[in-house]
Image (cartoon, rainbow, N blue to C red; front, top):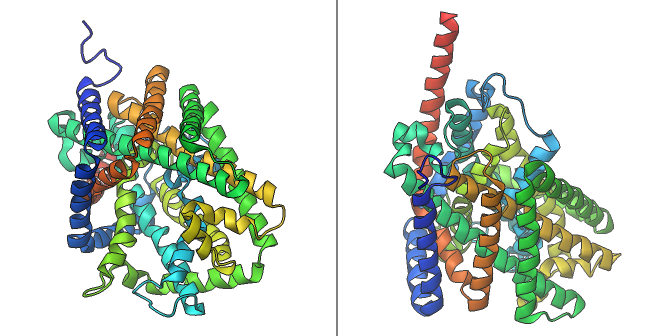
Length: 503
């Protein structure tokens, strides 16, 4: 009989997390109303009663990220002295950006500013669809997709990568907490953390798979009049699952990197086309103004709790976003850590915090600006958020070509995230930097199968809410790991200086 030391995976982490996920799935299918009521109540309580803590946590993580980059810690390497980066700067950024952002930027890029344009955020107020509302809409979109979101990923990535590459720890989520609880990550506490990460990742990405399939189907219906029905959803899930399972099976260099590279090429091309073909000067003016407003109001926006009013709005937008980013942090941080070997902490902060924020600002300024300029609000109300980007395409030349490019972009953004999630799941349960091909393939297929079951039973939203609810305990874990990171890096630097003195 194989022992735990010879297994290619940790049976406790694998089977317990699988059991919890299946139990949630059965609950969602057998008692959907009961689950939906209970999960929504829990999530509502955490966001309404603890919204201030979500806001404060995200703000602290931004400050900590800049301290890491600007201090002497920034010179430290995620790895040993002889370790070199595995990927080019472009491929490295393409993979980490695509993994973390998913297809959400394509849907919310034009849609979120339009929502805020219809109903100004309480921090700014103002008349709907006014010039002031347009500026406030873009500023808040910058805020939701800017520094705060990426700091959440970064402050898990750095301790995880540093501990794994310098201490030879297993590539698991629990290793991020080595500088918090030490060798206890190898015991029951570590297994609890890894089980937690597997559930959050499997639930979050399976629902994303199903929702992207539904959104692509809606896009085909809106743009081409093709009603795919339930069979179409299953077909899209099957195709997406086959592609990302194959990509994660063949590995980082041949599969995930290739998709990530092409994703960035098309992302840049679509952005340039809309910038040039649309009202260019309006985009430039709106982006510049909103950037200034974002920089001016960042502190106030970060700590704005809307005392006495606006709690429902904050819970539905800002607090929801922070919880969403936190729920994705386990697998995103493990994936970014895996591809960042040999990079300095300063490079990693720049690529994981600064550059993605700039990329999001540029995308929102142009695509979100187009949503405001062409006023896609009626289309959103009639056809849903997934229609916004297609409604913009209707106002631009070469509509058919642009729509095809957009669909390709949605698919490749999603595939990069799904690839990274399947790889992260394989690392969670194996602890290996390079899990076996069969284990990677298994988790890719499992994600797709789980998504198909949820889509078929209409349980996607319930499981998604459950997975995002995991952000509540993770919020406190993030604060603990931030303190532990500085303590651990400081101790490691002293050990290095001591070893250098002996030589």
